Image (cartoon, rainbow, N blue to C red):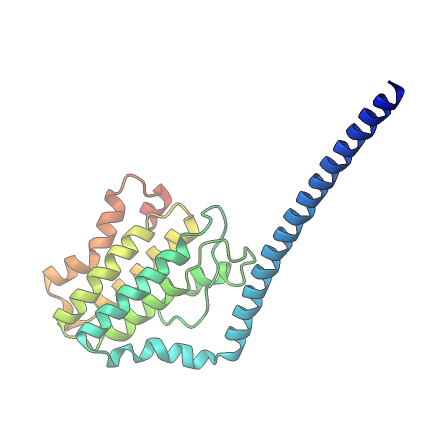
Length: 223
């Protein structure tokens, strides 16, 4: 009997030891997986920084300034793609600030850019790099596109600006509103674009933002 008890005792100890080994193994496997995920993320970020460091800022600017050379169909497709990228960038954590703001924009005022530049909120916050570039593309092409071509590209931009103007992040929506205001001032100064219907098309995003029940009160006051 005593030997039987000893055998049961040994059996229980072996079970406990096996369970402990299993738990330890699971812990280290989970830790290794987490470490691998962190390493992959850091590698991706380092690769991104390396690519940015290797790229000439002037060449990036040229991509957008050269849109004036695109065909009517080409510029519409370019704007569609840029809007799609902008939507992905802005779909970040709305509780954080905004990043990706540079000083290359010819339109957006310094009063909006200055507080955002150098934001340390990281890549999880909304980014407005493509939104800023969209403003520049509109500015570049305003003087060179026929009305029909400009109308097609502006309809795509206007819908995007109206949507972003109602964004829950105040800084994002204010950036969109300020961009619209600056473009509007420049647009309305052009004698050849004084047609009433054309002006109404250009100012439609403001009306959409004012009518949207989800838009912020301070944004409406800004308009």
